[in-house]
Length: 90
Image (cartoon, rainbow, N blue to C red; front, top):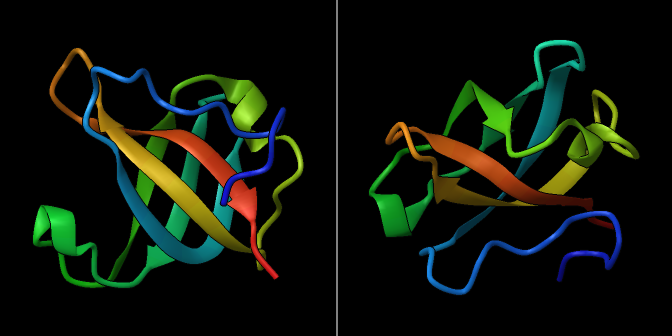
């Protein structure tokens, strides 16, 4: 479950994919985060490490490299997946 105020949920009309991973790097200026994630079955993606854009830079507050996170992906207007929600997990 994502923490209120830290990770806004995607719009109801947008399909959201959920996954877990470990933050590898953060580029706040570019609005990007690198996450090593497990398989994302809803996308038929294997586990891998990759950079994602975030829907807005505020999502990067409260997470740092090494954190285990739960995150949500939605398809952006350009067709690429962006992180629309993220929260540390225990």
